Image (cartoon, rainbow, N blue to C red; front, side, top):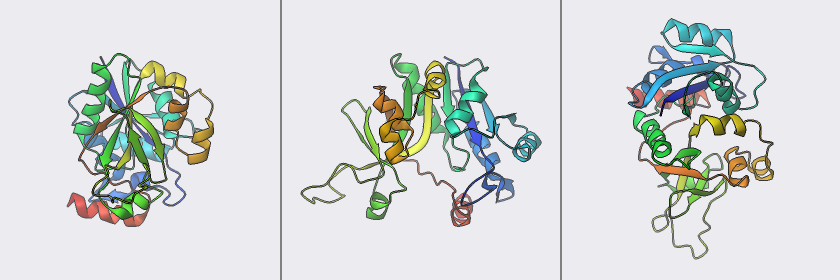
Length: 242
């Protein structure tokens, strides 16, 4: 099966405009994401899907394949779907452009999950939550899974509910990492599906798939990622990369 990675790269950001080209140790953030994604053993190519000529120019400067997509897309998934529509591939990995610590093993794990299971249409990554602060942060999306590692639900709330207050050390809480792999055929259908009720409530687009009855396979990783939403996040990433 042919797998490719697509990195959606948007110029606009409410909290940090232009962050995609923010300098991290001498390189724009998007270059770090691209370079680390290309370490994947299973991706045949990595494409940057951008919405601004400044990103397109930067990508070409460091040798990346990049395409210009519509500025009107509501989500990164829509941008990825446009970039992948005319590309020969069976599996598309949606790699967040603001996570410069992405690890190739996570990418390869998602591709493997879809390659091994012909019925699997979509996969994502999860990580064990170890601190109370992370557990109670609504910006950290929680997920519960079934016995076969399929997602049961995603929420900004704490799930499952610790009714007996046994504590975080005795309950396995998982957080969702914002990277997805799709079968291309499903991705092109998914982008045209209307927003679901739960998606509108939680503002989590993966709930659209669950409400439609689509199973989302999860892979567990110990790799930590840091999304860059603010200049403070950028400073943290710079320190970690050093």
